[in-house]
Structure formats: structure tokens, C-alpha cells
Image (cartoon, rainbow, N blue to C red; front, side, top):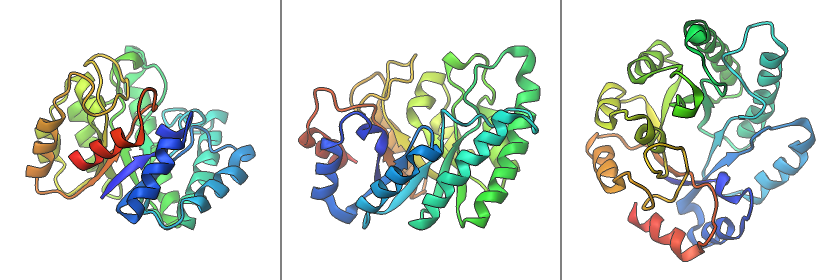
Length: 257
């Protein structure tokens, strides 16, 4: 199934809406908010109703979530509160899973091991909470170059997924590209555990969320690897904006998948 992340619609939702109207139920939506704050829940719920009929997946909060924080910290408490609000929306539409980030913060070398431990413990607890909503967590690879030392390198990420059998993996191809990870290895090591892939491109150094044919990543090669893996995961276009683009451009990318 192909999905379109709501990230593309945060500044201008015209192309997003037109693509959904033209594709109907053949195009799903990855619902997304940076915060899932109390104040925006009414508008998010209305947005959710307006997308009725399209298959749905969910992306959890980012700006209000830090899953590598200490157990009794106010920040972790606020993170779980934001996730509860997001999970309640996901439950309303019967979403299959929710994407989570292992961390958002910059990681110093001296704190890597402790933050790794806390992140895994907090994700495990969050997974138990998500189960009560009928939602599975999908853990994304987010150890990007601008976040300091990798909280999880490639092998540590794979090991994390295997230690958390109640969770799935969500592999972001843009992140794979700018961290130098090996997609073939990820697909083989995580066979049967991959819920989906975020698709976007970049210059190989920064997480730019460019459209799939605009960057130094060979998207055709990446898609060949995914298709030859024997998996049938969700493919989620996670574009940053529609600057200089129109609906026809988006349909071209959808058709190329």
C-alpha cells in the first residue's frame, strides 16, 4: 500500500488534497502532528474525519516527545501524554501502527549508553500502552548526522528491533542514505519485521525530505532491493513541502512506485 505523509500538507495542503481526491482509497494517509497538544486535538480530530475512507497509519509526536529521557522526568511524562493523545486518534480510525522515534535530542558520546538504555525501556513501556489502544509501534531509524553520535548505529538498531518483538521496524530511506547504512542488510536482518518505508531523497549528508527523484540516492535501486526482499511493506512518501510542485508531479511519483 502507498501512503502520503501529512508532512507534505503542513504548509500547503492543496496538492495533498487533490492527490487524495484523484486516487481515492488506493492512496493511504500517514497522519502526522509535531505535537499532538491538548490545544490542537479538536482540529486534529476534524482533520481526521475529513480523511475518512483512506487507509491510515500514524506518526507519533516529535516536538513534544523525547523517549531517551529519565523515567521520572517531566519531559518523559509529557512525551507519554502526547502519545496517549495520538494513540486515541489512531484507535478511532483503526490505524495499523504508529511510527516512533528512539530520540530527538543531540547525543554526546559520554551519554550514549545511558540514553540507549532509557530509550529501549521507554519504548517497551510505550508499546504496552499502545497495545491497550490496539496499536503496534513501528520504530524508525533516526540516528542522523546532526544529532551527535548515533544513539543506535545500524547493528544496534537491528538488535533493538529483535529485542522488542512486540514492535515493528519503520525504515526511512532518506535516513539510510545520509547515514551510510546498507538497505540490503537491513531488509535481510529484519525480514518479516518491517512495517513500512519512508521514501524521500537528499544530498547524502542532510535529512532534506526531497522528492524521491531529487537527490543523490538511487531510488530505483532502493526500490529494487525492497521488491526483491519478499516483503510487502507500506511505502510512505514523506516529502517536506510542495514548493514548485503540482499534483501532476506527485501523481508521477506515485505511478513510478
